[in-house]
Image 1 (spheres, rainbow, N blue to C red):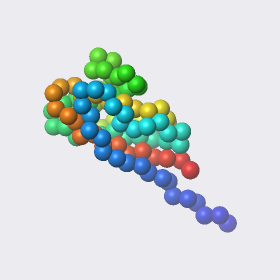
Image 2: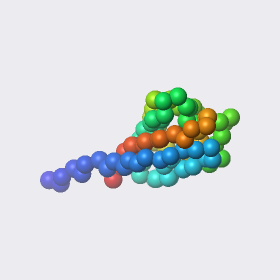
Image 3: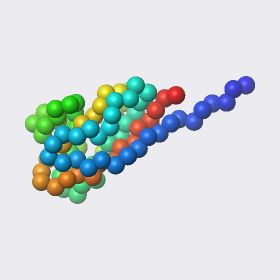
Length: 94
């Protein structure tokens, strides 16, 4: 009998400022992704390359968003003047 392998998990911290940055790179093995906005008052906006506060999906201060089967890169930009501490946790298939 074979042994089952444990799920793989990736995580990191990213500082998001007034210019869109990659929060998490594209990964064809990603099965799930949680992005957390750790700022006390500012909204984080996420989306594809070129994301802006006008077209991004907002994650309010202190909240997180879960993505399922999104393998593309996710970019982020801050909504106000303070940089945002962003954390992510991704589940990876084998």
